[in-house]
Image 1 (tube, rainbow, N blue to C red):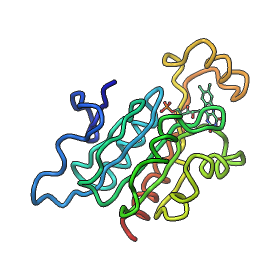
Image 2 (cartoon, rainbow, N blue to C red):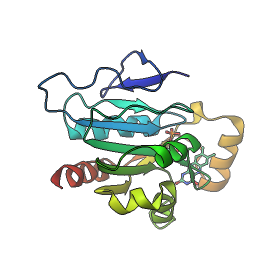
Image 3 (tube, rainbow, N blue to C red):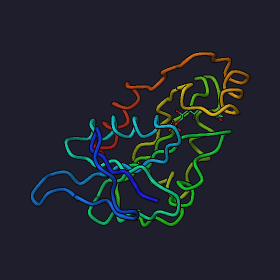
Length: 186
Ligand SMILES: Cc1cc2nc3c(=O)[nH]c(=O)nc-3n(C[C@H](O)[C@H](O)[C@H](O)COP(=O)(O)O)c2cc1C
């Protein structure tokens, strides 16, 4: 499996397990965003978070069994999509073993449950308690349905559960800005 590391837009594939091109020597950038996305929305949110944090913040789309080396970064953001109330399995696995003790930490989830729904529960369930307790910023940042990316079963679930029959963009840019500001203010 390869990983995709990007800075805001598109970069070429990267070697699994590392973020190549750490910040250039002397550059002020010390943050990285690691996401687990199935259909691309969490990756897009990760890119927006990265842009809000500054120039040249890399975004890594985590692949299965991947353990990116984050030693070069003092600030790390983890983001995962939520399916059936659960985070992506490979983010769950990575969050359990990643060495993030010394990092300023941001945690987010991408989902489409409505505002009066289980957002806090989904966020709370997505990451280990030890990470949640010491996260500087943690937030539900919205999501989207893009029907052309969903398989037949997923379309069925979305129509049935979310009552959506066409694309919905509910990425929460205000929450993204707030999240990034909280993270850097600490
Ligand atoms: C089959 C299916 C199940 C989903 N289940 C949930 C859910 O339980 N809670 C939620 O908040 N969002 C749920 N969503 C919405 C996704 O989390 C949302 O579309 C997200 O932005 C997808 O991110 P991705 O494109 O990075 O995979 C579901 C979407 C699909 C297609």
